[in-house]
Image (cartoon, rainbow, N blue to C red; front, top):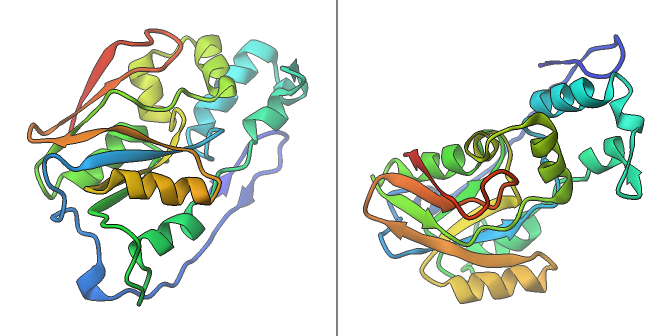
Length: 219
């Protein structure tokens, strides 16, 4: 991918990953059942997604040098670059990895990156034809809320562009154990909602425009 941003120096970014898995332990989405709980793990920044929109908003409001703008005891640049939380050391032991038994039952995992909760949860739920009701999501980080207000982005659009405070969603019939394991790894977790028979994602917004409003997205 050709990456461009501040200054006139674009660069090529590339990465590769090789992994091994046991076919009988792959999560396909077919394991998910109505009534399963959805536990979300907290994220404190933009998680490296929706950055074209972030840059456009801050550039329009603060100019080309927006990253140097003082904000909340820091600068917009440093706050926007809050490092992503990495969940693998927490989640792999939960599920058991390649040859472990695991510590709790997990039916699905959604990494909340580009497309936000609607797209990433929807991708996991499509094989089962089920949906999710999520009334108890984390509040978006302060820098995300500021960006949303500055750009006058609707809550509906913000939840499709950014993670809005959730970095990972775990679908499980054992939410208490999942949350306990997450907290032991220093990661804040909460019971966000449950899987429902209807093929839609219904969430209660925590955005800066219409907090408390119910938003619906097709799966």
